[in-house]
Length: 345
Length: 166
Image 1: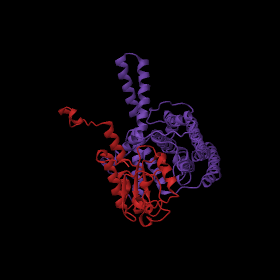
Image 2: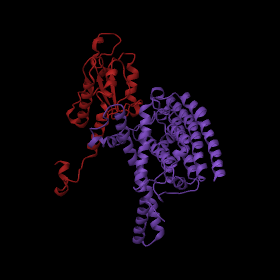
Image 3: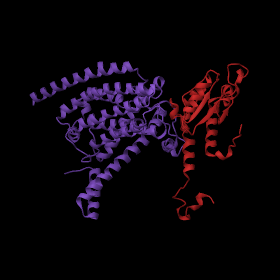
Image 4: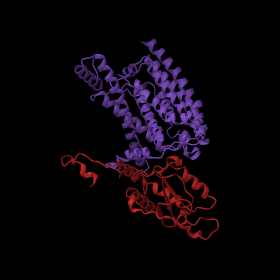
């Protein structure tokens, strides 16, 4: 079987450990630990790179320079920010529920990291190629909203509480258009397995087959990841910083980390479902994957720094009155299309 | 003996050592996140400093945080009245340590043209401790950037600052 660069590397390392230990099971166990460490390293590194990217792209779009003094090209700026956040005082609000309040930033990182388990990074390079991959992603991504609610509620602060309520309203109304737009892709593929969805796009990417679903998915994903024009959860002109208002220092940095991990997950999901995953000519799969993900992240940032923030009622109206009916229509059209296709051939 | 001298000669080109204190000083001085707050017209100059022409973002100081819990630097930009003084002090107290204050403009420094008015605080150092005073009415964005860079030097070399007991 032909395997990609990453899968070959993993197989090579597994073989190496096995020859050293002389024990197959132990080698597999060590490999699983190594893979978990690798994915956490990738997420952390990606967050630092994304924050730097965001600030430079923001500067580029607003005709500024962006951070360029700390380290070469300002590359150490995010590192300085992270070290500073680690060294800040840890303030716990007097009336907050300490246990829930303190747990929330850590809990939020679990769903953000867990979705990476089913993403195909390269041919054969997928942690768990489960038969309900898409369903799993949807289920895990929905967990994030719970942490926002707990954190905002436990802060005992009106802005945190209102931010938490907004987070719930916003994420509930973005989940459903996302689910229905993915459903059209699943109908065309006939499988919920991530690797099947990627291999179904060998000849033509689903962005060409399902352009409407793609647009709905992108807009709803912007709502899901709380990015402008839908960053109402922390709309600073209205509710200070939303659910994060009371969090300082390292706790807030964890929220920040989860936010950018979610952005990366959204970009990977877009690439996997609509842009052919790791497939592409000449270059190895992982290189194509990284290029596509970076382009999608750039588009998300481009949208963020171009559009102003919407109002909460406008966002809800867009989601329930426009995106959801369009997604339902798209499913019907896809069903009819599949029926006609089968009838012709 | 300097801590740098502990590194063997052969490793000088490859190894960089510092103290935790030095690392934190470097990080804090390079990542001053101001609180989004403006009292009056100096705030317009503060916004201008962050915009395209002057670009505070070059130094990494453009992350204006709306919540005092995530801010490091309080730029008091404008006239402080006695009515506004309690909220200002509360905002300062809500910020986590280490925190810094810049008094921007003549009004924040010493009351400016309203120094004799019954309603204006004659200098915000009557209310909260101040690290850097920036004169001007209002100070130009360059002056604000220079003031922030002076604060950066102050964070890096705390030994040069002698606190006078009042």
